Image (cartoon, rainbow, N blue to C red):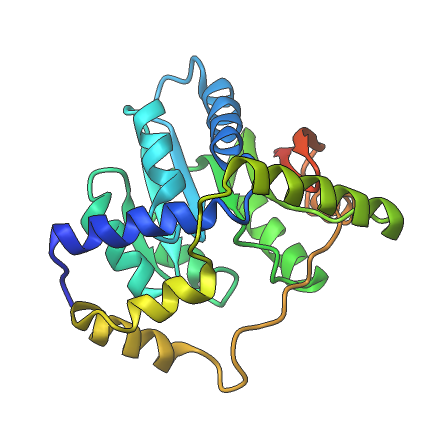
Length: 254
């Protein structure tokens, strides 16, 4: 199912553009995540080990690799098409693993040879409900070294519904002002992908893996709900370090 570099470059570029419609100040959020990881590994004698949860086509992994060229990065995702884009376009950024985050045996599939220094994620964990998130956070706490960090950039609605609506509006307006020319959205990107003959086999494999009822519904838990689960899972310091509207970077220190 190998892709040509030109094909991977084209679709990753279009992915980056359409994702700007959804992630408020996406590039700034990536920068903040890299800042946190860089700070947490400063002075470490060994090569930092970082896992990118739900890495998709390698957007965050590639940025971390540019910031921390001395780090070992492992990207994990369940989507065969996005993983192949990452392996082709961002081949040197990370080692990519095909696994379903949270399922039995997924941590063994990572083949880690030492404790993690950091686990990062962007807009990849919001589909998990409280029980699944708690199990995942416990697994990550066991993988991280003392002082290691979990950094999650995502949209976290406020517990107060009125404030949640306002924060969402602020974020959407900001994204519209910054990316008024971004014409492609999530659905149209996948519709276009389906017309590329080079991606036919990967798309068929992606569809084969999807559950019969379609993708799971997004849970969209609030930041405070995540914080409670993280503390229960064994993280000592938990909180938001960056926010614009409902887009936040949530950090948990092991």
